[in-house]
Length: 244
Image 1: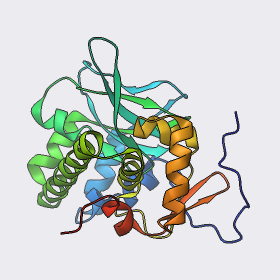
Image 2: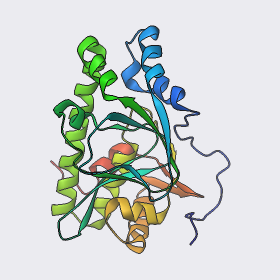
Image 3: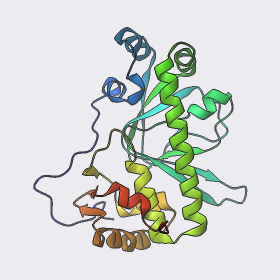
């Protein structure tokens, strides 16, 4: 199966967030802002990196949460599975994403699976270091407060899109959550294919393709070779929303 959308390779493609390694991800992440370099170096000294192949588990539902997880490269999706085997995707996790803070704070087992949609490298911060930062750093706590608030907004939007909106709106919401990060600036290119968009939005590849074409016609995104570019984040977020 062709892994690209196809089309003409752009002369000046928009650039994605690119992280060379674990240290590069950490230094570019928002939670390091306001921390002294000695603190960041101490944290880096405790962290390690793990490679996850396509289809492999980045994290599993029901397992003890031992680390805060960041995505260095690749793409993963968070999902839940019901007792009768039905699967529902929550959000995608592109490079630059950090997740798992809620379970760490509550000291509970993970409530969702995280699966790699392509070869993915992840950064792992041990729970004891995460707790140390929470206990000693006001800037880190401010970051977590903002992150949890954004996470809540994401899931409220997800619930609305799944219950009240059509497929095009669900795909738009899916893309908005993928790009909604301080690391991403318009225009921003994301390496993603139709099948992956379908998996993240809980729709078929064919239906995802139709939705992407409509969003492109509205100049909200631009489909390019190997992925797509978000041109209007505000428009993507408000797509399908009733006027106030």
